[in-house]
Image (cartoon, rainbow over all chains, first blue to last red; front, top):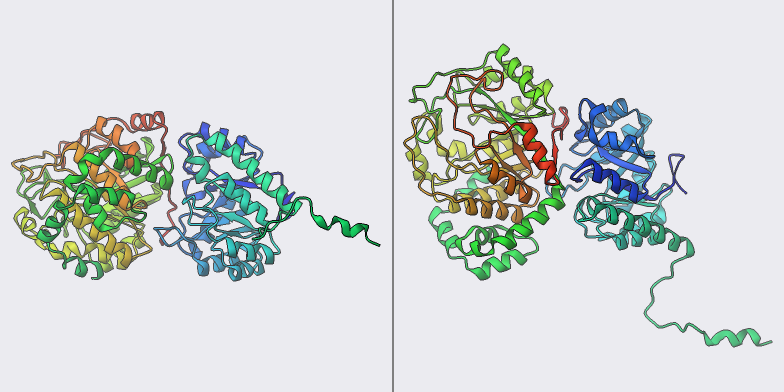
Length: 256
Length: 371
């Protein structure tokens, strides 16, 4: 079972709450995804937050809330947002997102590391969204992050695992869970990330903007489970040459 | 002035010739382009693209849903004053118009804020006429602290200011400034703006640069469609946007599509009417070439037009706007800047969006972001 900061999660599919057209669709999609951890943007939270329609949906589901700092462009802003989230929602979990770049919303590595350091010291369970940079991921691990969340492709692009080779290095080296975040557009891509050995994936846009969010959420749930099972079973490496299904080498065992 | 200097190299007539020479072939290749740029934008707003409007609409819609999801952000304008020290031949606030001039007092502002909050808004656009001495920094210093705590996001549409003043506004809590060039045609600009600071074309052209240097979070651009050839004005708005995006990579941008509306003392007739269909074409062209830029549609447009165009490519919407100071708390006799077309309540507009599968987003910012 997936364990982050000593808490267990029944699902390895993390989801988001943005981009849905109606709270009822959001709820049905989250149920179908069987997710156990859901991120929500603090900046979207209604000030009278007990009336917030997204929060009302999440409160009825067996999920851990993962507030995110989306909109923050600096470490200071992100730290502020995280503290506000802890105060309003009573949770130590935070998905650290700092993207000053307004076109591709790519994460700022310098500010992210600075903020992660401060938030870990302040007792948060920090899950930083970052580039698929193996060295940065080690640095984030060293300052105490509970997991790392490298991107597969720019957020919302559905391009899949463009950073595949670097994700592989990150997964190989990491001592904390690796959650592939951003860019996953199809269940097959989520499955591939899991087969590579990622501990979890986070999917939002692909579900929320699908023409059938509920069916897509269900497909992602199955893909993530299949990918994990395949990883545990030892998914074989690709190779150039053919390999016979009934190897002729069996006769070797009969030799004395 | 990084972007304005580069922008001044573009000649109106050259741009116009290039864009009117675009062919259907250019339009097709623009629609297939993986990362369309300015030349593709020109093709998409050209007369040749009118035949491809259905394909443009489909592409624009897909890009909007991918970037913004099934959501639209809601905001409302608050007119603080109709004082104006400019003479602009197309505007109801123009200084020679004999209308009652008002500037809201602190008490009136509190009443307006209360009325607006009751309507459900959490994102506010402050608007004034352009009057440096009577509605300038001293007034903003006084009134913004009364307003800022009540809204998660604050935008302003006031006269162009200096970089230092913009820095002060950012500190006061302003997140976004909208400043429309009105027209990028220098000679036409001179004919429309007869008195006041606004006569200075270049000061206005350099305003987005000053905003970028002041580190504002979001800059709103646009041309007042109808003052000159709308296609060429939009082409120059678009190149301005590309130049600004490169110069100020941390800044967000929004585009609005104001069409000339009838106003008090109205003797103005547009030189270049833009039809409903052409406005849809323009909105789609922006979305296709600038998937991340926020596109805004105001209550200048009719309810019917907004209901069909918003789901296509718009992600920012005002509703129930009053364009005269004091209009929310009590109907004032001070004249409005222009008459709005979509007069439905905020609740009605929101309910209509939800029925179309789009969730209205009222809150999307934290006050401390950008400070």
